[in-house]
Image (cartoon, rainbow, N blue to C red; front, top):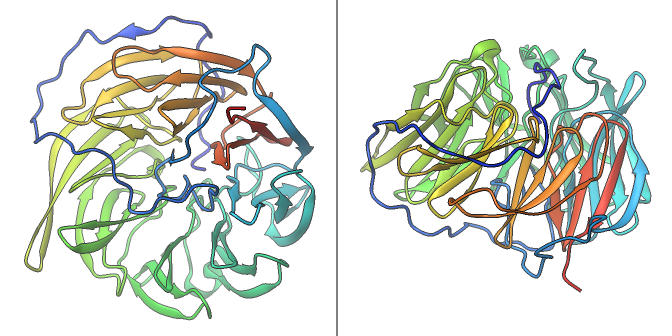
Length: 427
């Protein structure tokens, strides 16, 4: 989840796809290789944006179109407020955060039935005029649930029982500067370390915490927190953690927090929200809203020197809250309230489609699963030629800013009142 400063207005649905008619002169890098994820894990979606934190599922055998009334609904349950994503493990457990009145919770549910198994209080509810509740998504790793609250509390809980293993109140201990709309970052596990964007004072912008004990392994850098979540990439044999903070993109070492490179990227209200996207072998894509746009960087490694240079920038893709997904040589995502396809090579727009508001995407089995911010769900082909919708159905009402999760052929969705599971597998 990310910053909650936009309103909920949207364009009319059903508008036809519009073809791009304006070109932008940009540099042209070498062709992009096929997608080869560092980790391929089917049957689970145990962290923010899935196994590789890129919004892409490697599952196959999914329905290529849906019945008129939509995919089969397996269950639907009431749920408290919040924008936290749903993390699903191969053991069949689902974890998400929510709020009820003045309190925030993390809950564990049976992914097959929706039955609640346990819930644990995680402090005060974050209240905001655009929507109450937790923002980040739990990260489940080796039987432990790691989470970061809007008020800068880090928890490690036993995934089976919910028992607290360790916790940190970063606002109290390190004077973490809580962003206007609350911390929204989802924790990243890198080896034995949990990576946190704390925005603390005196070199505490980032922290590495021992995943077993919670002890501080390292702290580094100064700066302002954004609302994005980090990714881990390997470029030229160098492992890097990419953070999109309040006013820049930064690359650091996961072992000690050493800064490799940084580039200024200032968006109104410090609202850098979308997750950076790694495009092998050495490119990083970022995007933000409020009229800012997108940029593609090339990262080069020569010996111990790691540098980044801008390849192109465009105003044709302005991710406000949701992140793009990449398939082959194209990026698909929301330019504010318009779904678009742009080229990885030069940022040129290929097509656009209105009608989903500030929605979100999952890519799976050659298909785009599109979740509109008013609860409309659509299925479309992944193609740069034009928008080709296969199916559409209304699933939820109210405000839907939580990204879909896909695990074991089942699609999980939520709004501010309930959570639903749909079976999208072929018979």
